[in-house]
Image 1 (cartoon, rainbow, N blue to C red):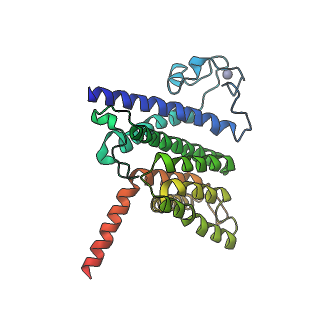
Image 2: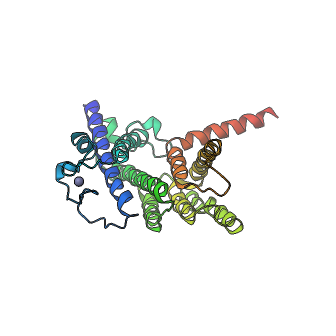
Image 3: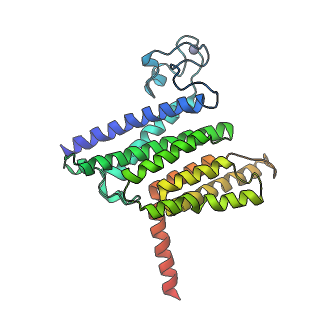
Length: 290
Ligand SMILES: [Zn+2]
């Protein structure tokens, strides 16, 4: 019975994740192209409205063999892949922060879903824990949107950062494991140094990157924020070296830094707490040697 319940939860998480990232695809295309989000789903090539069965995440792409039924224009593979990634990420979020209580230390929210333990009691606490998982998924959807839009346009829109900030405020209530002081320090710990660097070296970062990190810090707390940014800088640095090696790069070349920050932050959400623990063990070991 418990196993069946877990299988249902995982399938549900996969479907919710695919749908959420399908919505992200719409935002990623429409916001830079200034198309209203309220417009009916349509083919970008022949402008015909899509039927319901043409808008099902992942499955429509397979069913339509990647082409519009009317005009034959190809549907972007990236959107299909993004929807699949959304499904897997959503399951990963559930497993990391929900089903297996051993794995839920990142935000120090132990046993988020009592459901998995066979205790199907919908107490207020369980509801808050479930809302915590939904908050994390909403935040990850925003990471996806910011990553791909920044990759396409080199812009992190203020509107996205406002949504991230609102999700972060909600997380104060839905993810009570993280202390408020740690969160408030998180707003400033990276954004303020970046802002100062920006004053000295104009265009060192985009203003959107700084606002994004301020908004995220409230959700992540300063420790995970620092880990995420460090991973992001490492990844961005490797990418810069790759560009230099491929000789597509001179000192003036800019590339979008947002995607690396987002991937760094995502990594920190899942394994940041483990990295911090390993690091503090290492420090303790270093100290004990002298
Ligand atoms: Zn078409």
